[in-house]
Image (cartoon, rainbow, N blue to C red):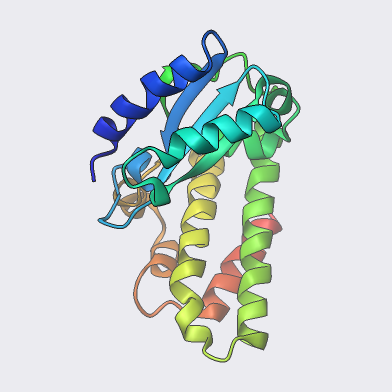
Amino acid sequence: MDWKPWMDAFLPALLEAFPGRVAFVGIQGSYGRGEAGPDSDVDLVVVLDELGEAELTACRALLAQMPFADRACGFFCDRAALAAWPAFDALQLKLDTLPVYGSLEGLLPPMGQEALEQAVRAGTSALYHAACHTALFDARPEEAIPALQKAAFFALRLAHLRRTGRYAAARRELLPLLEPDERELLEDGCTLPALMAWAKQEMAR
C-alpha cells in the first residue's frame, strides 16, 4: 500500500471534519522512513486545536471509513498537550515525522542537548530492561530478539546523533555509519547479552 493516496483521501476529510482546527498532520514510522512492507501500519501524527471526547469520536469514525482502516495508528493530540510534552520524547517525534500539512515548529516544547541526552538514556534504559526481562522470563527468548533489535535501532539513531550531530532516519542510512559492534546489534546472530552490554554502556555516557 502506498501511503500517499491514503493520505490524499484522509487529509481533506480531516480538514472538512475540523475546519480551521487542524494544526498539523504528518506521517512517521516505516512509511515515513521509506521502509514499509506489505503489512506495515500507517503511523499518523495529527495535532488539533483541542482534543476531547467529541474529537476522538469524530476521528475514530473518520478513520473507520478509510481503506485499510485496521492499519491506521499513531499520535493524536492537541496543541496544549504537545506544548507540555516531555522534551526528550517530543524530540523523537520531531525527528521521525514527515510533515504533510502544517509544521511542528512552534507547537513543540523547547528542546536542546539536554533533551537529546535524556532521549538516549530513555531509549537505552528501556532496551536494557526489555532484554533483561526477556532473558529471565520468556520461554523462548530468542524469538523476542527481532523486536529488541527494533528498539535498538531507535536507540542507535539517537546515540549516533549525540555522537556525530547527524540523524539517519532509515536503517539503510544508519547501518554504514555505525561502528562494527553497533552494526552487529541489528544483524543476524545478535544476542541478548550484546544488546544489554551496549545499552548499559550508552546509559553511562
